[in-house]
Image 1: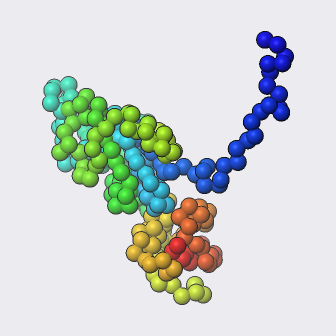
Image 2: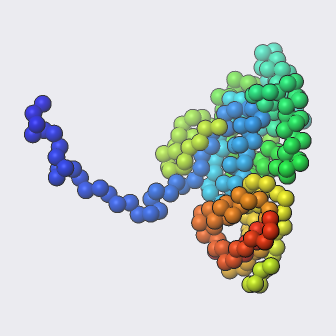
Image 3: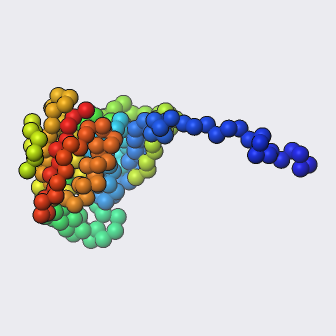
Amino acid sequence: MTVAETPTIEAMPEPVVEPEDAAKPKGLAIICYSGDLEKTWAAMILASTAGAMAMPTKVFVTFWGLQTFVRDDVRITGENWMQQMMSFMQRPGISHRKLSKMNFFGMGPWMMRKLAKQYNVASPKELLEIAASMGVEFIPCQMTMDMFGLKREDLIEGMGDPVGAATYLSYVGEGYAPLFI
Amino acid sequence: MATVSVDLTVDARGLNCPMPIVRTAQAVKGLASGQTVEVIATDPGSVKDFAAWSKTTGNEIVEQTADGGEFHFVLRKK
């Protein structure tokens, strides 16, 4: 390689000055992956606030995150014994989340809920309802539904049609800011 | 207290993040463009949060005062 082939500053293209609006994301595309109480809480705070800020928001719900979106009154899910065993060991539903650390057989979440009430912090369930009422879309992952044997009627009402990773990535391609929780 | 006339008041005292913003957004939904809402909050984080909310949504902060531990905002819907 000769020195002449190295691009010089003169040869560099002019920097494109984007209009101020161009830097703004079109909205927010959250991947709700974790089913842990603390991460569910964070995802619901961001989803409800994004709704309050009139940001178009989509929440793609996958893997353990989809357990959160099973109706609270559904106890056992799945079609075969392995799927049923998984729902037996970790009760699905947004009101039955466990902490990833210091769960202590439910003592940790109980204390979290008590503190939240004391400090007027809305519960994940309340925040989910608020987010949905403000136009935030919750979209289940088809593959996770198949793997866990979840049916549409197991999931809370108002969720979008089940889709795959390509649909999520198309949101990012359209300009939605991605967030993995 | 607000010096401009307000169409609605949101009492967000005692509420923690993100509820002052959420309750305000819910209240603003029912207003017509140009109408105002007064918000009373005690969350110290709400001062910066309302500035950010206003910047993102385009709803204007027309008045902002702090009185003891209470924060008053008057917001005009875009």
